[in-house]
Image 1 (cartoon, helix red, strand yellow):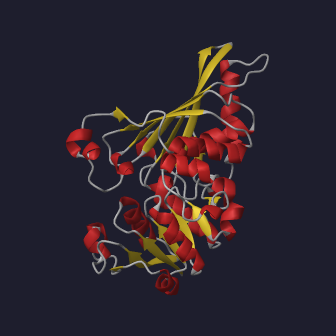
Image 2 (cartoon, one colour):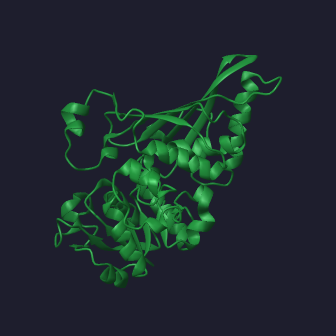
Image 3 (tube, helix red, strand yellow):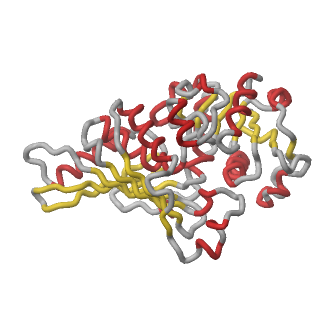
Length: 346
């Protein structure tokens, strides 16, 4: 049985990890930490767990956690997470980090976008990105895994195979994403209050969101080609889910038609994810309800233009931001790290 520690246990992603572990046949939650609520039952913080978990919150102590857990799910904010990850790894605990502290490939890129000095800079660029569809072999032996961002998951997964095959222009990619309010976390903020978000949709951080560089960085790493992505996120009045609408220009050959280009792009995505249990290239238009509370990804392609003059391609991708965008992706990574079937508990 894999023993799992939750580091930073009060947020939505931590609750989602705990919920998934309740149904996991080969893993159990043995430790939960909190800096502000130590001593309290985890079920008091998350009433959903009442009668289902007897774990009490304890202070962070890497050595003690190493005695109680084989792997830690670190659900701390960026900046605060890296030091805890470093201590856990030194104590022999394998770590899946939910923050952005190890996702990017260079220290200057990280420090520019996150505005903090990285406490473990020698590991930047040397931590595997937790997307088993591309990095399973590295994840299997990793001591630290950088769990992907939620918005980036919805963009990287459709874009990387198409860029890798040279099927789309790399300097004209627009990612327009809508997210449920849970993506902003559990802490009280004016912009996520009910009266602010109900019956409203709003763009934010235009051309300035930290997940934009993550999308570019990872597509480059996977496909081997640099890309330019204009990313615009929106907050929508729903609890959970992400729908990304991605606009690209196909690279065209003589004789291409709108139908042939659409088939070419769809076939490339199907080839890329053949045998992957959680990624589905579909004919219908994906919606967030189609993937709610699952580790599944749905994507589809449409091409604009007249029959013989293809225009832009539009890719629609749906994930659950708390699941494939965070916690169930972490469980998938844990399964790979410990040699289990990727779908175990999912």
